[in-house]
Image: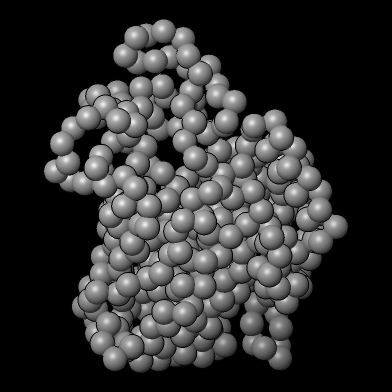
Length: 384
């Protein structure tokens, strides 16, 4: 199994991570990682920070001649904006109250972090909890994806709703879903794309923000990943990963939310045997490719529901913690809508959990071992 620890603040010098457990011999593509980092920064409704940062990955250890060595990987992404904040964000800068935050934003970590960690400046909390942290998380997820590609697993991300504008998605049309990364909101339904952009324009006009639904589709996952043991359930692990992404407040595996309002006969994915492929298949995929906490061989699908970003230009009612007087919440430079970016981050979070489940079942210190064990397992399934 793999593990990673990341560190860094939104306006600090850099974001970094150390990943342990990646098998040796994996070909690392900086271009693949940087492309996902660029996609995370794109999208209609993003804020001014994206014009300052041009995220590029720097790999400091664990890779030699383009391949992993089996040792921990150290990743770094520099913050270009640090030069404008160094006087208050450097580790040993002399304290001033410049840009001190005392007016918490409802829905953000500001106040609860202030209470929990006993700091006199909420910036100590919001700098770390900022969505800027997700840049390094995307880099970690990209490396996990590169490993899973060797196992025939592919990831797709897209946006299916912004505010009340909802897209019609054909989950079998993978080409259209893949190509949606070329439009401004990663939406496969071009008729809905225009409505989504209008919603964002309206939110901007009203000094407000909007959330929506980011979706992930994963192909090529073999049946048998995960467990029905409560702490090893694949859907539970994916739910934890997705809910750990900033501003995500709900998750649905497959049609999980819709299924709660239907009869069982309208929900369960009935089974047949494909004698040509020598595989057990489902006629439908309403359960999102996971049954009893274990992958069933169908595509894994999930929806992440993102709340509107807490930072709004018009401010929300709050209290200044220094004076205890009513006030409007702080405005920090922010996005109007970041659901497209969230889809990239959720994709990364899922890649990490699925790779961990794969390594848990197949293991292997090298990519060669890993792939051979998966190949043998697929042959075993054909005899069942």
